[in-house]
Image (tube, rainbow, N blue to C red; front, side, top):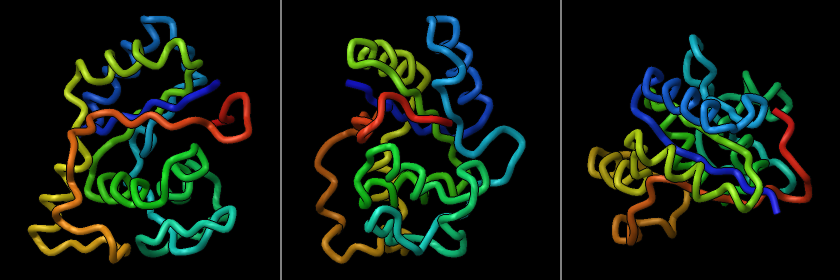
Length: 167
């Protein structure tokens, strides 16, 4: 089984350090994705659907764009993340955060999580709670302030119907 381990970082410098540490521990660079790519502005998120699913958030991108210039939410859904969670991570990138996504075999999930967490990966649920306090609203009516029930500094999703994601 192949999984994608995802961590959220406040700045791209820390994210690049995570990439280097993953590489130094034997994770191939081709299996590591950074969103947004270094030196680019945060990418927009989508309002259209992918595979019959709608990210539900965000504004302007067309889902037909290349992943590097397209929607964070759509890219995360394609990696196997739920729509609701993709909205949180997409909003984090829109607000200047950087995601590290590493595709690994199941036996490497804990090692990847340990490396990502050791660099202070942010709790996306806590971030979303803070955004809601300042007026941000998720497009999903059933996600409310009280829904934050656990700390989540890394997110692991199974890669759907593929051996490995092609970045």
